[in-house]
Length: 72
Image (cartoon, rainbow, N blue to C red; front, side):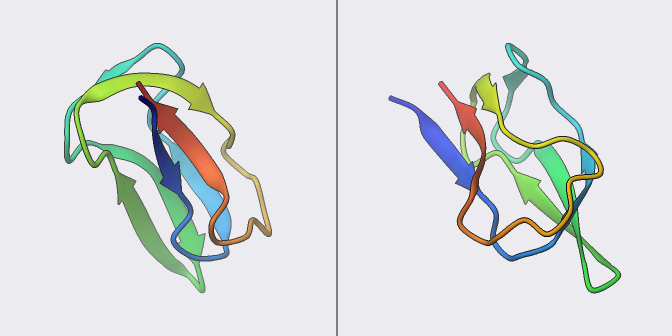
């Protein structure tokens, strides 16, 4: 069963810290968004393997609710 990490707010992708097939632990920062000059980290809610990365550094104008990363 996959776990989907959605964007919590609209904004831009500042940094992506994981790649496909990378193992992550609960609490690891997966990516950082830039929202109104603030950095908003998004963390892994559980241990898993990154199966999908739908974002890249520099993506702009993304909407809240978009699935950014999936973990298996």
